[in-house]
Amino acid sequence: MLNTKRYIVCLVGSMVLMLSSCNSNKVCDKDVDYVSEKGHTHRDRSISVLKAGFKAGATKDFEKFMAIAADPYIQHSPDLPDGWKPVWDLLVNRPPGFSSKQITWLGTNGFLDNGNFLVMFREVDRADGTPPSKIIDIMRFDDKGKYAEHWDIRQPLSEKTASGHSETGTSGQFAENPVNYTAEQEEKNKKIAVKFLNIAFNKGKLDKALDKLVYEDYVQHNPLIADGIAPVKEIFASGKIPALCYDIKYVVAQNDIVLVYSKVTSTAGISAVVDILRIRDGKLVEHWDIVEPVPADAAMPHKNGMF
Image (cartoon, rainbow, N blue to C red; front, side, top):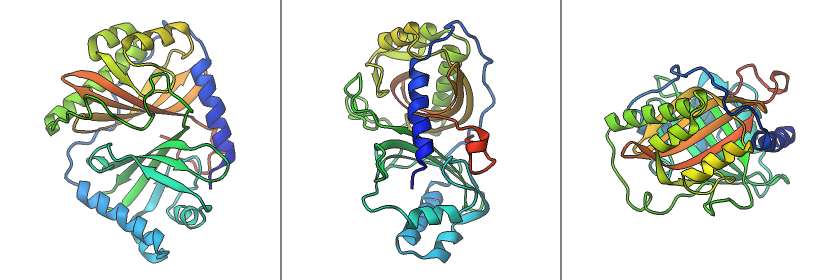
């Protein structure tokens, strides 16, 4: 069941992050130190292990469920203690009405993979009185294929968005005209994503980054911002979103999608932020994000932090 305290902190913290103001000229350190694995060799193995866990959970087969995870299994979710057993306890005690919808456009059939990392995007209704949320699950598998580490980042879904687009969906010219990028192009796209975040936020040159690296009719899924470059410039210039410092932790890519998980600091505090970026021909053309304020260390059920 959802930690209610976590939900309240997330909701209030997100509002603070969105409404605070600060010095738009703030300059942060350029970030070049992050985890970025290559290739898709382990995709089938990782998905097979995860699905075996899903099946074991559904059939209440405790031994098979426990067998898929590494020991130790490292947990970064603010909801769960370390180890794999608490995940079992959560699954078997879900309330009636709980639902989880996997977003299938991410990656291939709902799984984005890179090296030993696997990512899912979901809409979840926990049937506990809290609003539905969008959730990113980032999973790392060890060299033996065991499920070894997990991160999740959650944000309540908004009732409406400034662009009119779904916060979790995709449509239009890019989705309807797919590409098939090589692993080499995926690595180039990662560098473009990191370059954009460094210039826009860590160097405080948002307008320059937008003009140079973003498609003019940029498709926006952030609930507060309309499509295009101009609305991004306007909302940051207004102070409704504060200046941000990005400490990039993980970058994964598949085809034209790059996912960046970062520790983001502003006058509002520290948040865990996932940016999902579609990149075509060297420019950002579509964007989704998930933002969750990071709880105090004393409120975390483990000592691993969210990163």
